[in-house]
Length: 59
Image (tube, rainbow, N blue to C red; front, side, top):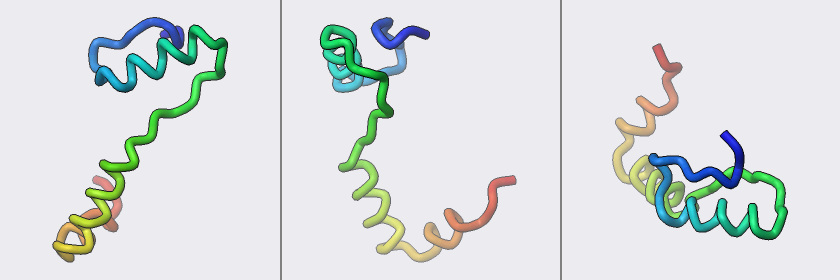
């Protein structure tokens, strides 16, 4: 998929960022949702069992 083609699974924020990147000729960079990363870290700290499960290798 080219950087300027919208993906049906993308959020509007990701679409807007991809459109801006294409318009400005910027390289494709990964989209990082910092609020989701912070919420995950808080959840792992709040519920130790989730942290243990997250640390196990995937099967």
